[in-house]
Length: 111
Length: 114
Image 1: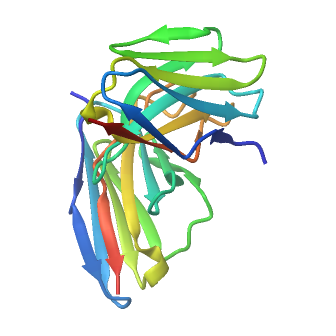
Image 2: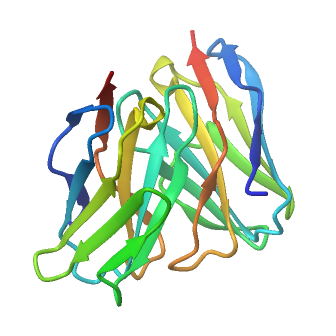
Image 3: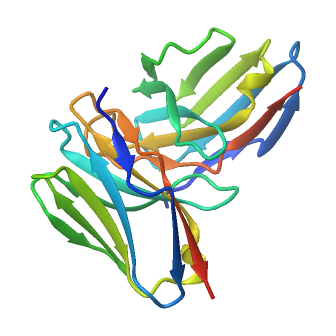
């Protein structure tokens, strides 16, 4: 079946560096994408979203890029901080309105 | 305020027990969701309520029984669970059940079935 997935299950990044988390999707009907951050013991927390009529969207220290040609989504975190250590999930909405989550990437920030 | 409140935070129950999980939001959202999350896995959708009516049941076993008493509350009644039902149960809400509405999650109830 079609689903959202992530390229790497883990990412280790030096504090202060930029992080890039990748996500591939296969459902060409998906028109809305969202990134969540889940810290240990907590529920997923909304970070940023993007609709399919856009290819870039910026938030505070985060940028989401969407490449519909290759069905690729990425989350960039600028100046990564220890508090950014978490599991990051991408998710997509296709026309059934359900959120389909990717497998997740665990980001560890090294001091 | 984007808060979804879940109680209890932790629950331990035997296979013959009956318990309930509760979820509350005061954002005026008309869609509410139950998800199940196993360790190191993404959330899996269980149920969707839209305008207090059950819209989606993802073939969830009948030992899980959802209830939406009003637009702010969502319950999940548990009965005769199995050890493999141990997981983090997440509640979420969104403005409506439609594409492009952000789902806001609670902190979850960590359930252990003995």
